[in-house]
Image (spheres, helix red, strand yellow):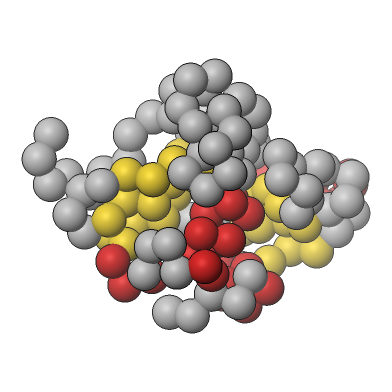
Length: 133
């Protein structure tokens, strides 16, 4: 594969989270960081990816791409920077941050109207997790 910076599909049930080491099993959650050198780090939830970034496990500038699972289209990885995020206590995520991601803002708004919570952008989430760019 070489130095591709494309994401690769998450193998649910077998891939492990690079941060918490849990098996990645919920098809509506998950995330990946692909580094500029093509190394892929997979996470069971977006919050694990943001926690890894805040801990400095992967320097922000080493990443070629950030990807999250679109909660409206399970198993589908989307660009995390352009995603719309919803934090709703009625939509639990694997590591307890109640964080889901959506490719289309309308999907996030639909879930917000049904479950409540707050819509957030990439920069909002980086600030919440204290990630420096």
